[in-house]
Length: 182
Image: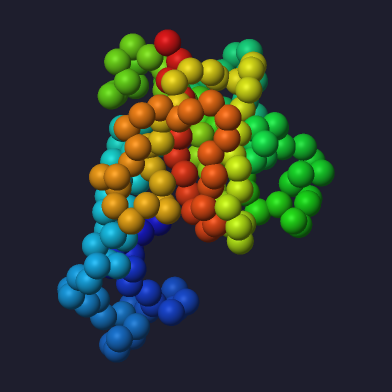
């Protein structure tokens, strides 16, 4: 959830009831510096992705994904090595990277007739981590970066498809990868 000013890095310093504060905690500065501009562009790109991909706006509780019968109401969870998460992985306190696969909807806007699945990677690691895309039987196809919070400027997103193998995920970053199946 966003509240006014979040998109330009405004903070209420942890106060979730700032409506009753008449001081700098609730005031919004309209002086936009470079950090605020970068933050605003990242939020704009995320909102654009949400508007473009219906799978990011599901109205129902998500069910576990089945690789052989993917459905937009499903979700699958992966480790950095591209393998599915096990119960032990969820309980491992040393793991700080999580990848979520959201199956696409055939004929999504902006994808032509292809189905574009989304892999959303969240890293709270302190060092770069190599990420491997999930292998078969999970969706295979042309993968491209749709969002990378490590970039200062979203216009510098790579236009070329991801190369096979691994990609380094920056510490404390979010990456969204589209995987287009023909």
